[in-house]
Amino acid sequence: MDEPGSLRRALIDSLAGAISGGISRTVTSPLDVIKIRFQVQLEPTSSWALLHRDSYGSSKYTGILQSSKVILREEGLTGFWRGNVPALLLYMPYTAIQFTVLHKLKTIAAGSSKAEDHLKLSPYLPYLSGALAGFAATIGSYPFDLLRTILASQGEPKVYSTMRSAFLDIIRTRGIRGLYAGLSPTLVEIIPYAGLQIGSFDTFKRWMMIEGLQRHPKYGARVENHRYKNMYHALQQILRSEGWHGLYKGIFPSLIKSAPASAVTFVSYEYTSRWLESLLP
Image 1: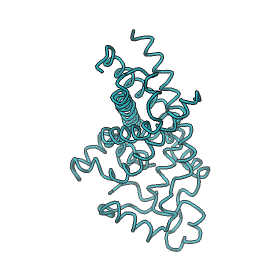
Image 2 (image 1 turned 180 degrees about the horizontal axis):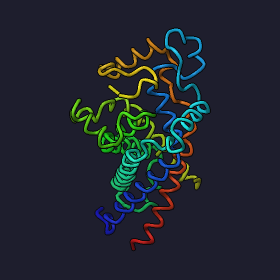
Image 3 (image 1 turned 90 degrees about the vertical axis):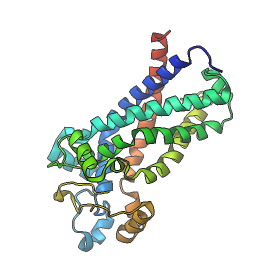
Image 4 (image 1 turned 180 degrees about the vertical axis):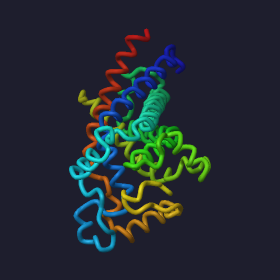
């Protein structure tokens, strides 16, 4: 099973995954920034806010177009790429780990590292492999996801001027465990998402188709330290204070982003993989 070239294949998967992740992240960054602003804003982000403005006060972000205008006016064009450096440090290792683990699992199941042999596997296997690959990639890259969220949600004026200052503050106030705050709900989201994403891509290919988050007060109410004890407590609190709408903050920019993000990632991976194969005989 240990065929010649397995190390070369792993190198190609890692590099192609990292490059495709970087391209996808940079292209879809504006929508990601808007999504994060929606999610960290305690005030409602839709017309529901107008019905409850006496309880919440005015919302800074109330829609994709309105949010885009606010970010552009207050922060300039670069505001749409706020937090992009830690995001690249997240997505590049994430996709590198994801595609490497995915290929390794397929190789073990097929007894071969050849792509044509992988197509002979059960059509259900890619869904399981994708879920496991997503789990491994999330564990390996999660601290960068946390830093990306903090920097992208700040707005102006900044609380943290650099990724390093945010990192040191988290370590100082919450320790190493602070870098993995919110990991449980992230895994609950990522495992089925990654399984469906990878499984669907493989299926189409077979058919020959291609918690104390600090920010400036003007961005709304501040999420206090230890506001949420765990995932279940967070769910209760959000439902109590914001209703079902609160669980879907940022869903529209997320939906708009997901299709091009996945397309760019997989197409970039395929082309980059072929290019690297030609460079590494």
